[in-house]
Figure 1 (cartoon, rainbow, N blue to C red):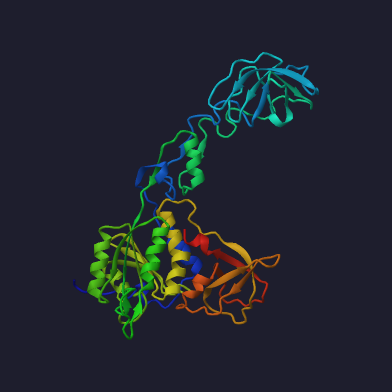
Figure 2: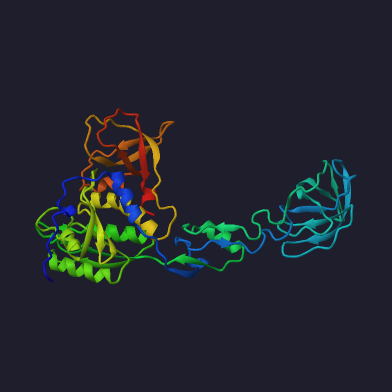
Length: 420
């Protein structure tokens, strides 16, 4: 490959840092939702993103039915609100069967979900009915009202209702709802394919001997696990040689096969950091260096029109920038209309005595032992301390140029929501 000069106006030469808010807005605006869809069975739909609204073609329930086991009665006006009434039992209606028409003043034994027969207009639970020894009559001692314990037609869903909206991530309860209106398969967005590779001659695969100066490649497994967790297909090239030509070859290969390219490492300013110049050589780099900690060297651009996200090399930086920036970008690409990460308010259990120029995403654990939950800070917040992420419940956002005392309310991202 021929070398290509990097233009002087490139973001690579810029010393300015973009704010975290501006970077997130830029990324989300740059994300283009998928347009490719496919039909999947209900059994295969959980976790997929719905691509087409689901309308009900039926009422649910499709008929008036009993809300409990008991007796359904055909009341007339003289029966309403009166006590100690006796009715002859002339039918027995189970779920899945239909009963005969009830004449006024008669009752039928009925079970939960069974259709209300013609003429009947109330259901009395069996515990409130006193049957005769032979079961031919019942005595109801309390006063009776019309329409007791009857689920009316369409009580849950009306015909033509939209029951699930496009862009929703399918959960088990959604599968149940779709099945209840007779839907056997649904239209979802196709999974996006994410191509990944990893740079750094110091990296060694787990299971192999660790020679002096080498480290195990934890980022490879973290990134692939995160992508699998959020429903992506992953094409993993593994570790590649830490050279510009090798990096360019990997980027070109993935650009012809994938919807998104992601890397970890190689996006800083060292002489052996080749990812950034390789992206510039094959496409364009639109975003680099965020005013945040951990994770300043986050890169975004395109390689032959395929989006590229370069995560930092330090494990905590890589993990945090994926959760805060890459996750909403990918969710929007997937067609998910709930792509924005949810933030909650929590009280700090620590002070911040020195204002810092970069926004910090600190690992915390929530203490629920008091009336108001509070966040405890992990004592080591270095970008290399992956044990802080394992220990934590979530990430707290410490604003730039701010000091505060314990008890201050800040924004908090639960890890349980940042990894799905």
